[in-house]
Image (cartoon, rainbow, N blue to C red; front, side, top):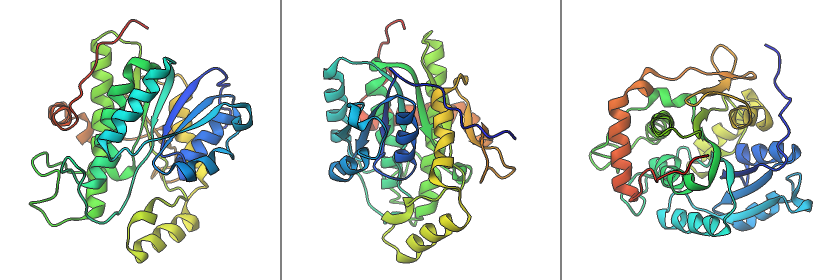
Length: 301
């Protein structure tokens, strides 16, 4: 397959990228910045993000800014949405990139297990909160591991099951794709020109397992990904492709290789579970209960 590296010019376009102080998020910001985009780095650790922002092209021209956002904390999500909305400036693309993998058992303030709270619930609230500002699309970053997901809507806190962190991760990534497809359906039903698309990075060298609290898991993730994974920028190209090319709503992008571990951006395979519209609807309704936010009225765009 011919490599895709010619990212279209993005001058005048504004992107919000969650979790962009390192890993895939930072690589995404760097690629977009190099093509002239304005980038809002939405990160929990502002000090770390400020240092990372200086490595993003366009920082010295005032095209890169850092704002605090902890997507696992709905109060932080609400504050971020309120502050960004107060600017009155539109956002072309929201990239829901922030995520955790293999973290110790913990619950959010809403009683939701932390993988699900960070990777999915917070992004659900963020997306619906920012929809009135959006002009183009939402990009949801998922994972090949969504195929192992089995969402138990009656036990999102893992109170009735032995905690399995990697299963919890897969569950959260399945939820991300169910949300992406359901959001796109609802936008189209309203006649909106906005679209929701998905992407995954394949096997990419990042530090996502650094928060596991387990030195073995952290070491395997750190050295394993660097031994067999693509460089961060290659994994980030899948997100950038989903964010900048004329793909249809509901599309899922990942590496083109047979196992989708390596390669260049191409349409990726989703588990048949993602086509379960009944589950997607139930997940949406449960998410509304947890976050207190639903699809807002949207103006013509």
